[in-house]
Image 1 (cartoon, chains in turn blue, cyan):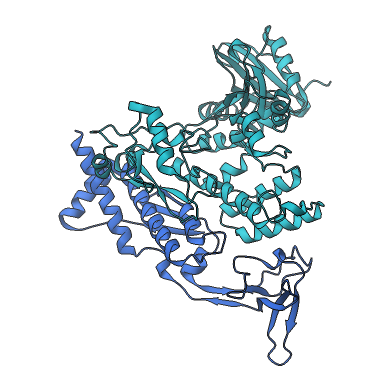
Image 2 (image 1 turned 90 degrees about the horizontal axis):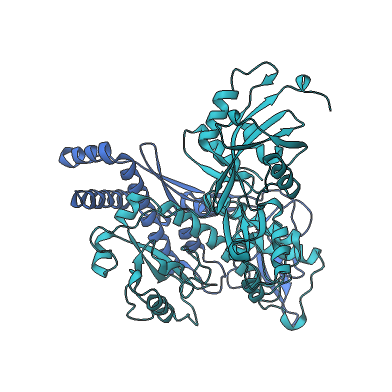
Amino acid sequence: MLDINVKFDGSGAVGLLRKLQWTFQGSAAAAVVAEACGDLTRGHLRRLAGRRHRPGIAHNFYLRAADAVVAERVTGGAAVTIAHEGLALRYYGGTVRPSGRISLVTGRPIRALAVPKPGSGAEGKTPGEFGKLFVVASKRSGKAVLAGRGPAGMVRVLFLLLKSAEHKADKSVLPKDRAYQEAGAEALDDLLAETINGL
Amino acid sequence: MADLITTAARFLAGKRAVATSLSSREIEEHVPRALRDSSVFSARTIYAEHVSETKREITALLDGKKSPAEIRAAMKLRLARLGYAPDPAQRGGLQDLSSDRRTNLIIEMQEQGARGYAVWRAQQDEALLTVWPAQELFRAEARMNPRRWRERWETARGELGETTTATAALSDAGPFVALKNDRVWTHPAVNRFGHPWTPFDYRSGMRLRQVRAGAARAAGALKGRNFPKPARDPMDGRVTSASAAGMDMEVVRAWAAAFGDRARVYAGRGGVPRVAVAPDAAAAKQVVEAALEGAEATAAFGFPPEAAVRAIGEALGRELRPETPMQVSASDVRHILKAHGGETRAGQRPVTAEDIGRVPETVRGAGRWQPAAPARSGGGETVMFVAEGGERVVFQLTDGKNDPRLKLKTMWAEKKKDRPAG
């Protein structure tokens, strides 16, 4: 779950205009700022989907994230919520460790992460979706993998078994703060223009 | 289930998991839309536990707590545990319940439907419809064999004639633009599910994006200041109904039975069979929450059980139509808390918000229905449920010609020691 909060202020004539707008259109203004930020986020994630989604993986991570964007007004500003597993990890980065919960497959506590080996056909899948897999471990390096047998009986490595995995923060997952401010300001201008034109 | 965070998760949680041996075509032909829209099902999936668990897992996904891969793995393991084995000729295909294609399709469609609803609902706001009055259907994901969207769009435009604001599509890529609440979005040629939100078809790769007022005018969808008005939310506590004319009534009744007191099959005008579906008991709790926040809300919370329909009819001295829902409004909740939540009469205990939230269970529990003094409810035909637990719940029958309702008007709670024995 990723929450983005946006607050607006300004100085000079623009600041005065905005203050007046918030006074007279407060609730409507908050709603359009929220939606403008949501709309910007959706568009950004859809563009990422076009660039980053790898063919052959059933679920399009960034497109699904775009679908999960919901904007709402909150006290003093706007909030955009993206309830999408994995997005906050990409944005903030962090270390992933095994949860220790009981595995549905083995019935034992999970003690390692199964990270799909690129190009193995395991990307976007979990070990439970494969038939019989077995652990291959190196005593010397201490490294372990989950492997299976292909149709011809050939052993192929599908998952790397890791004690933890580091994810670097990727701020490009979301638009920049300035883009949010511009999107919000543009929407406020539109609201004002459409309202005044109708008077 | 823990408290749900997102609108999308609450949308899915409010649906009923239904196991069925019917095919997709049979479901479309013999299950009225009001029932389909309120159900989570998968064609030819008879494992009730599997459907119900899958719904629970996708609800968690909508709150950002699960991934599709986790759900898919759990679905496959569960089916294996239930003894499911696909027909070897269908293995790996859409008819194999445990295949990647089938499991992915179920997750994707449920996720997209709930997400689409949440976005649609958030955008039904006057200010938003002023800044972004229109929307565009566009291709967000490439497909090997894309559907003929231009043909579909133009079919809908042709049928809707002058009543639509939909602009002409110049190619297979559109543009497919119309005001947000235009009927083109729910036209069966454009959206096979009949909702104004995504998805518009199975794995279509199509999405909606908003169009600003200036661009909507330039495209010809918006004329002057004819901004769309916010639409009523079909999921906000309303009873939905649909005709079951020409359908296999055995199938309709069996499907409705899965909803218990949330669904009623009845004879509508001219004896045409119809089905009504009410929200579940959680709707009453949401109204109580809204009342505590000072907001306005009204929701139905199911129909009286069959025996209660007869008992209420006897108490009122006339027949009660079986499709009469029970309903609660925020203003009545506030009245109850004001009148009976603080100082109470001798022998009574203060009514709490939790008591009111539990009314759906209370009136389906042990007790009896009897006439209520009209003074208790401000006049009209009234009936009271006397619960063995001490609660007295008064409903007023509003008898709109085609829209009868049992509205919760007041309630109080008697202390156990003061209640007469037996």
